[in-house]
Image (tube, rainbow, N blue to C red; front, side, top):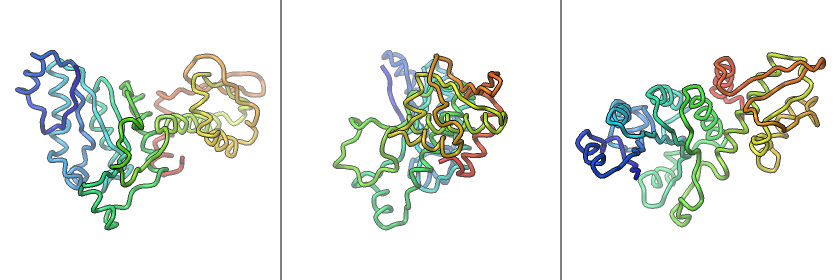
Length: 267
């Protein structure tokens, strides 16, 4: 049995009661740890309470997950990164990222219709999702979900969606594009790539658009990207057949990717 709860609802007494009734997993809807963003979203708690609720759930023996939202009013890449830096070092058992959706009958609908809230671009949502994915990898936190399933949403209640499509696939594809960029900056004589066969769909992207972006940036790779094996890294082969590798949890690659994502130089 699992429950999802706002940090303001998580107390020692309530967790003790949940434990008595065999609840094993608590998903903490932390959303953000920026006090300005939380206040504008009318969440009813602050950054300290968001972090404390995660710690309390873990300390009381629950499998603990965190839920974040990208695209909230007042948020940006710097604030979003700070939220990741606040929450992921707490080592939750898993993490979930949702793109913001504006529903009918909400205060956010009023702000959106009055143009007091201008939603971020899909490029921003994609960049922040990639940052979330890569930061989870660095901290060793399992990514349980990125995005929403269509069955989760009653379409008639939706006013605006900040992202449509498979956000996890887009985030993974962007991550691999950054890995390729990093490898070719570090090793300029790479002539071909070998990538995990299981990641082919993410690397190619919807209608092959992600692969097109890779080839546009590195034309000499056209026809020289091989999907083979089951090693979750990018292997570059130089003219002499020597292999050079990069993985998503490499600290040097992570620093490179964060700079690109924060400067909006990836989408």
